[in-house]
Length: 166
Image 1: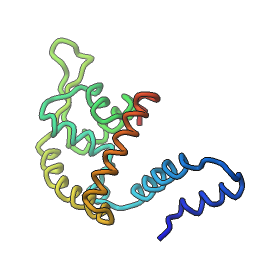
Image 2: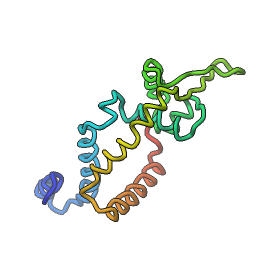
Image 3: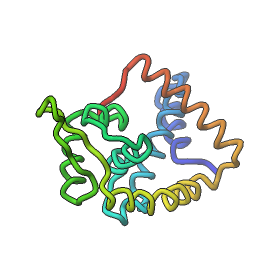
């Protein structure tokens, strides 16, 4: 079965015979997959969270210690401004608590609340199962090869473009 990008590639090849459409074949498919994944309701959507918000909660749970907003930005691959906005929403929901540093009142230390930990604990298994179902069309070996190829692309992009704030 042919995917939608294959048709686009044929159109470009018709418009520009001899054009190397290899980059479009790869990045077009990555972009199309990303767009479809963003449209797919998942356990986070039903819990009223975005993936970016869950990344912050997940970082706090995985590292199991207080983090500053700067550390959270690094852990969640987001800009400081984006993290600040997300933290405000997570604090309002009672999922994250903020403690001012004893020595420097400008520094905040953030932690999961019990409510936040309970939410992550309740969602992570469901989220992994949901993501596994999305990948069910690929064999485990294909998933491993795709993960390895995407890791190579990610390392290459981070080396040339740097981390893109989100």
